[in-house]
Image (cartoon, rainbow, N blue to C red; front, side):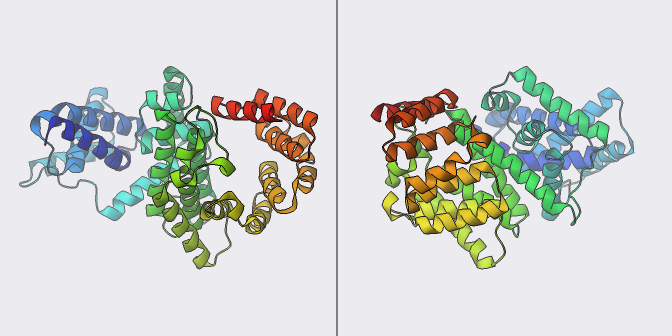
Length: 419
């Protein structure tokens, strides 16, 4: 393999093995800090040595052993070895001295590894942590993103993000947050918390992006999808996990058509549907069909995915089955009676029953959504359809004031100027 190929393979191994190695070390040493540092040091050694020595036969096992050694070295330096850590050191020594592959699996079976990754995810997403800390810790410990990458994605200083992650790990240790999968009784609530973290990560990358080519934000949506796939592998029977993955895939499938070459947001009715990623659409539709076949009452993510499936099934905007979209929103309102859901339902009502009926529903949300740019954008469009030009322009002006990124602002300015 060439040096370039080895570097590319190393990056692939990093993404595939990071969570497993951190989870294994956390189980072995009982300390997230030790696990993170040891894993990072092991990958740093790999980046330095593999281009010269060649890719090892089992890169994951090589990294696991190297990380284990780094963790023991740190504990020796700090003189903080407890019984568990002494046992780990003895285990490493025994395995390393055995004949055969010194990088043989140190930490159990494939089922053990899956269980440890689940424990790591639930620990990072524990409800005792603030949501921003859960997000940062999950991206670092489970996703393997560096502190600078996470800081850039969330538009904060590296030092501030490093402190956030450090405080989160310290709180886990000080509060004695257990490193375990929740009980069957607590699992549904805790899974929903994990999914909320992943959905927030995805939305941060997808909704806040200012251009079509921002590599950090696109990386963030990709990471959210990758982590949700991991959760799906670990919890294959959970309907909301499948729903969230389907929702992400169907949303991400439209990415290439979402922003124009001029950096302007392209709404759904103007998008080039031929530019959508057919493979992601097909995978998302398959997941939605799977959940429908299961016959269980759908949750929030499954309903959102089903709505997106209707949109992505239509060849043209005019082919959209708006009665089905409204019916799905009716179910969603019962599950999630939030004003944003009601606003999105009103948009579908406008297509099915006309702008006047929808405007009455939108106006009723003013008190709750007065500071939300999309509320004013929807209101402006409905007024435009009804010929209320002056009121429409005023609503567009307010939406422009509140818009979160340049692509959306450019779209709203164009729409306002067309009134």
